Image 1 (spheres, rainbow over the protein chains, first blue to last red):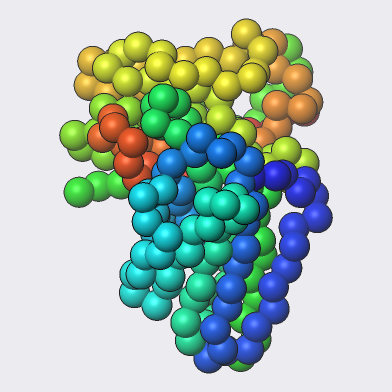
Image 2 (image 1 turned 135 degrees about the vertical axis):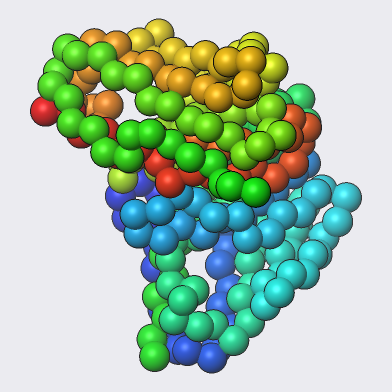
Length: 113
Length: 112
């Protein structure tokens, strides 16, 4: 993923709406992808992962879509709640790299009540 | 199972000093990775240890080092601290293969 430094892109949504957070990853050899949520003062929290042999995976209220052709990953959150407000990171890994993750710059999600 | 724990949670040091941070992985996890998080550079991989051996290393100077003990607990050390080392240092643990890594709460280091 590309780091965007200090200026985190921000997505502002109304409570109850669906949210879509996008991520462009950098390594075409990457075959494992994870989305993390990070709240202020806490470490990243695992949300959902997907391997490159899949293009969609669903969890509870979350769906991850993977488009390997354009090296793009998205996280969809259904019925967004105030507790979803956080910074979301995508991370990529390729099998020969052990557990080394390369992180994107993050997107701040703000949920308006 | 208890999550990943990191100690200390907060630390203030001065330039030139050294610091040691500790990480206890989730029980049964043999892989421990360290990351540095700053507003300017985001989350950057430092190194990974698996079965007491460094398996991967990121692009950081030699002042950053680590080790892993036989119980999978890991420590990282930063020598000759610089102002730019101020950051949140995160530890993540995993079972060892290519699978989910779980992060601890981090150690926030401030270098004055």
